[in-house]
Length: 601
Image 1 (cartoon, rainbow, N blue to C red):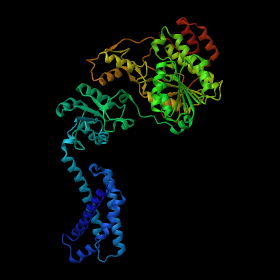
Image 2 (cartoon, one colour):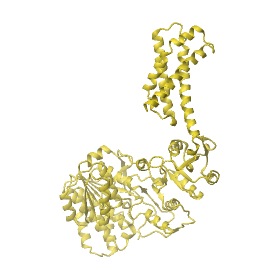
Image 3 (cartoon, rainbow, N blue to C red):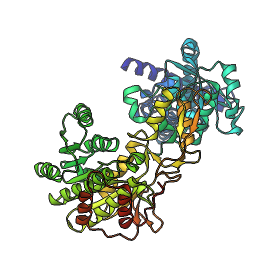
């Protein structure tokens, strides 16, 4: 490295000397008088010293000039300008008689042209001397805006398996231009012709996650029979490398901007503390555990009724966080004595209550009492346990189906919110809050695993209604916002998450079919009709509610009239209802306690 830098410095100083004489030559119209030749020789040392110091001081030789970019040229400009100023300062301080001052202006310009030109020429020479490397990979089409494509192309050119051959812009006005030597074509409708003409093997989309461009690209590449790839996310770079491509996933199409967390506040809340999570083996519960482990929790008490789920969580967390003390219990939130005993063994500072029954059709018929026992009594038991041991915070995971509920599951979750607010009055030391959000991509019981299984079987994909829409968010986003709400919330507050725009389930099915590499001709979509208790549109706020903003842009506080309930009376009725109560009696009782509940079963 030292030898290389010394060689480069020698070459640059030689170029500096040439630029010095060229400046004199140009100053005197290509004929330097004899007295000025002597003047130039006597003062040659000053620019050599000045530029040598400046080039070394600006770190010009730390750059790999094969990959010259604007950043490297900017640093070179600074080094040359500083060297020119040093030369000027020395010449003026020495008061060299009759020195042509225009040389002091001409030499830095010539110096930059020489140094910059040599570096750019070196890069061009290296790239042209190894054309086999550029053509080694399979032809790749880059889809996205010119700004995103310009940022992605250097990494894509470093990938061994792929060679970018063209850019397919999302803006029609970009057609016919060139970007980093590649032709720019538009619009997306031209994709089939480009695939045939350029013999493209795959396409990579570089647009922002969740943007319409990604969905359009998926549909277009699906019609052209191309696999659609994407760049790795930053958290995948360490595993895969920034030039490694992967297939587009559903999260890439429906995902949103990353959640900005109050890292300092969460660390103060969780680091060195004991945190208890119920329903820890579920989709949301397990992700909560992963997020909590990041913040240096002293003890993480994981509780779930499923032996297999808690076993899987234990294996994962022990491998990912060997330094963390994890305690993994099989327990049912319906059993208050068991919950209280665990909390007394490991008194938690924060409790996240994610245990619940959430499948609407199953809870709507035959299992109504089960929804009440788990969702309502389970919440009551967990909340009282947190209050009894003096936990600082208790966070209930609620749902958008609790707003103007039309099914037993939604009504049971709304009643759980009311019970939580009532328990908050019994334990003023603990802050009890609830967090509502919609469907979570990939969570157990959601439509995505169902559709994926149906596609794997060859279809059809069953959708209940062509106009049904739902709010969706990713599992990490949901868990992070739950943590943030737990940090911010005051007792009795209900937080509503920004779920973005609702998604048509039919469009979701089409995207999943295309992601599987097939079309709707291969995997048809059939409509089966709305299921018992199912709405066409979910709501995040009840009609009589408004919201208030919070310091976090994705969290709002639901404000509405609290419906007072007596937790003791609720518990007694559910216990007295027996193992198989009449469904109409359960619904009538729910309507009394949850006035906005309107059964459509």
